[in-house]
Amino acid sequence: GPKVLQIPSHQIIDMGQMVTLNCDPVSNHLYFYWYKQILGQQMEFLVNFYNGKVMEKSKLFKDQFSVERPDGSYFTLKIQPTALEDSAVYFCASSAQGASNERLFFGHGTKLSVL
Amino acid sequence: AQKVTQTQTSISVVEKTTVTMDCVYETRDSSYFLFWYKQTASGEIVFLIRQDSYKKENATVGHYSLNFQKPKSSIGLIITATQIEDSAVYFCAMREGSANTNKVVFGTGTRLQVLP
Image (cartoon, rainbow over the protein chains, first blue to last red):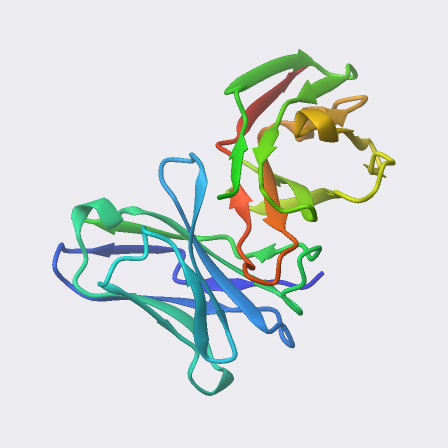
């Protein structure tokens, strides 16, 4: 079936450095999302993105976070600078039309470890 | 604001039996959609089943079915004839039908262990 790919699967970084998480969404999908999951707990919504713009963001989407998808390439989540509390698994998801009844397709996640 | 609550942290059942996982939600929207996803040990998140708020019939897909009790804002997941490979964390989720929001809100998950 359709797949969302996330690169890398694991990223280790020193606190204060910049990190970029990459997501290759399902082709022809138009809506993209990032979720944060700590220690296998609740998946918390960070942001959704459509047509080159952030549609919604949560309180977890701090000023140090940014997203973009330049020229239809990877959908990226950048954190600059990173903090210890950013350590988590970040899941990218996409949906075709963003309709309310649509399911999300998730990637396998990128585990971010901030030291 | 939308909210999804799963009070069961962990459940263990013997294989081939039926299990029900609870979920309650909060929303001010008259139209909304409820989803169940499963997260396997590898971390993969898999969509299982969806219930539309305007439908009275409980959704059923394979050995998954839903117990939708709209007056109680409840959407339980029922797995019949459980198998070892059903062991996973199950997340309930909701998306409001309003055009003002597109986000999907998840519950805290219920870990299911199916024992031989």
